[in-house]
Length: 401
Image 1 (cartoon, helix red, strand yellow):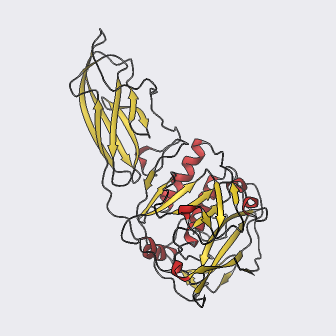
Image 2 (cartoon, helix red, strand yellow):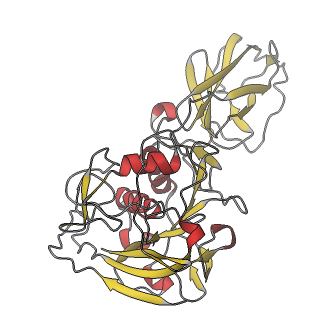
Image 3 (cartoon, rainbow, N blue to C red):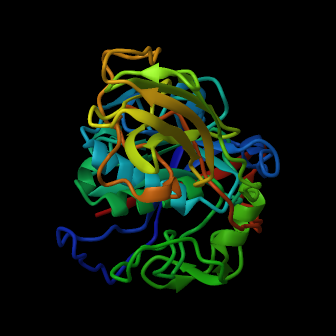
């Protein structure tokens, strides 16, 4: 693969409160990419675009980007990235941040490999040396020479560079995957497309921002400004209306007589993804589970008599569906709750750091939650041409911490 290196001189490197380390320089490498890979996304306005958050690493082969087959335009030889040994709470923070970051758009976020389904892969693991880059690079993505979309792109956020700075990992991941949709750097501290820091949490800004790293410059594809929101609106499409999940209590049966500590099992489905299911008894929560089938154990302290049992299912957008039954508790020996799971814990899987309501999205365990659908935001624009014959240039940029 022919590689041309173009270095943009960067000045004014600053320190950050987290770890007091040097921020990245702006370095691009220009790669040859087939021109058809630069066309606008066909997914906008249709099926959600899938973002796969990969903390498990893997082996990647050089070539034109294809997340379905682990082929990456970033690597120059077969490269292995080790899994990121992140805590359940840390991973939940990264996932929830990414869901919130892209909540305006027609995006589905998952940490389970979609396999042969078209998707964008964000590898959040390893170190820059794993793909042959120098120490301190925080993240890298292909970038098309005409600011178009690169289908099935693989981008990287080197988690070992950031440690437990989970917000930085999220913002870097958002910038890297946005590069694969044609977004340039912005000289605007509040936007994740920036290299500027020490201005609080970042989110995509609906404003005409100057392009640049540590100073303003012309945008890669013409003009001096870029609106990251309107560009993503055009390339991802806005999220549709949220449909609440459908939830069913499969055990015990309605009006059943049960014994203390009875088991409750529920199923739930959604047009996107179920974030979690909670057990409520007589208006009080008694457990949360993120894996189907959703299994719970009622507290053994419930009094004899009639009890209202409710399962509440949430999707990643915070929409809630409910199902209720009534049971009669008989501590003198009765009952059959049915469907009990000897391995089920009293409280399900829940994470004490997870916020109420599920609007942040993402599950709270460390094993992968399947699909988490994000919501809706704006973007459009792009343009300019740096084509070479039948090939268009693809830029990739390295971010140094």
